[in-house]
Length: 52
Image (tube, rainbow, N blue to C red):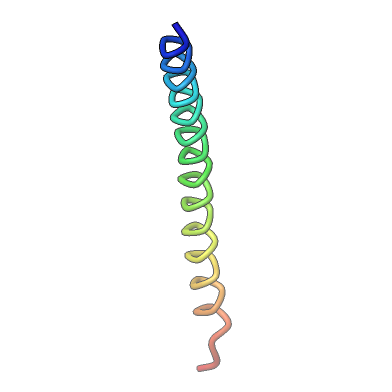
């Protein structure tokens, strides 16, 4: 009986961890998109202000 409870808890823990990882990946993907956008804006700014 104790083994069944442990197994259930492990599954529950695994599900919780998978959910957390999925949410963190979504956040990381959003940050990556924002970083790429900022880098593109920085390149534009540098090109505009480049001495000729």
